[in-house]
Image (cartoon, rainbow, N blue to C red):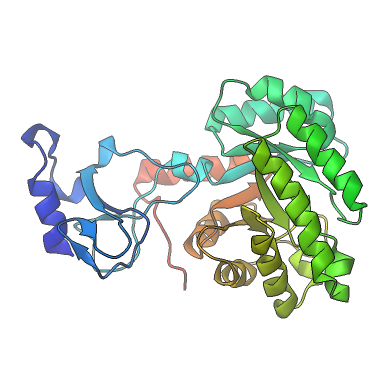
Length: 313
């Protein structure tokens, strides 16, 4: 692998080269690919590119895999930027007591750090869409929140109105009681209706399974039903149950769905270390209200040269 990277670097124009430790290797689409030849994966089409550290760009939804040549030993990638962290965060303003002024302040925070999205209450969608217009921060709201026991027709109507008002991401709560009862068809059908409606409008759906009420077997079942129904994400928690996100749940959920379905952790994520650990086990997003604290920690570590990937172990 190191010889491959050096070969890619040697093909770069002289004026783009910097001292070797500043180069990064990116494996697009798959990290542990054993079929690479001349920078291209013979099996799945991924490819390798090497650039100076100051010149790379990132996808907002899929954490890229980079590694410094000076540190590469076949393990996980190392360096991150604060923007990588910001693009994992759905800045949350879901508390029932928040005023309009506080929603406006929440939008200012999301815009300041360029978070992946701002997730607010359904009644705040029109204002949020106005405040975030023209930015890369996506408009997100919740459906059937927080208990998930609305009639399906009500959830669908709530989703339709949110989409009409400018929402780009829907975080819906499953009907937990029906899942526990074993009514998989009802759970799947409800998710499918909302996913189809969202996809027609170019929006995505994250399915909150509320892990605190489920056994591991039920968590796996909920994830698989979500994927079968067309969900884009599975998400741990509302933050209003008996327990929030755990790393073990994220690992289980990541293993329960295919790579085309992403995983979001939410509930009790209040520091950078938890975000990094969630990232390490495969989470693409984290729902947080502690965005300012997390980003301050990320910026401090970046300035000190210590903002990096962590082990999944």
